[in-house]
Image (cartoon, rainbow, N blue to C red; front, top):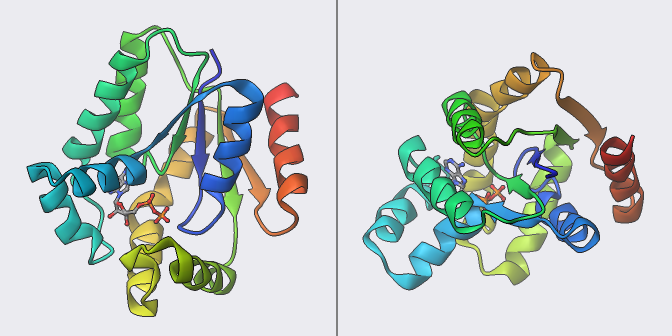
Length: 189
Ligand code: ADP
């Protein structure tokens, strides 16, 4: 089992690199952002509540995303491994993930952090907003709020994995293939 956390601020390229990892290693992609957007599209109560927060660039409650991840782990017991993308986003989520994985006799192998400066992030997100249809990518104020949430609540998650010797930071600016090569070297290193 190869279980990875792909980490980094909004717009760092987690989705792009996840797609390549899935193709190469046959992993299951668990993106809490995608799962929440699916709930919104389906019009569920959870989706309606989450949308109010997501439209403001604020994180949804830990209990909500932890519950979604728990369901997905239970649904995919025979998987070759998981890529966690956009989760854990708080230290509480990281602790809960640890407990959930232990319950399945699993653990995180690497936490790979894509490092990109704020200027580049804002440009990428505004560019993505032109085609993605995501309302949270179309407004500079909202992007700033998401990056602020990242700095306050999510950045400390790096320390959580670093203290377990699992943190690996890589430069997220450059050619997609080159960045992917660095990730592969970490996995196969
Ligand atoms: P990005 O990484 O581009 O910001 P995501 O698609 O991962 O986008 O997430 C979009 C929004 O969904 C976040 O701004 C947040 O409101 C919510 N969200 C996603 N994952 C989590 C999480 N693990 N914990 C709390 N909120 C989350």
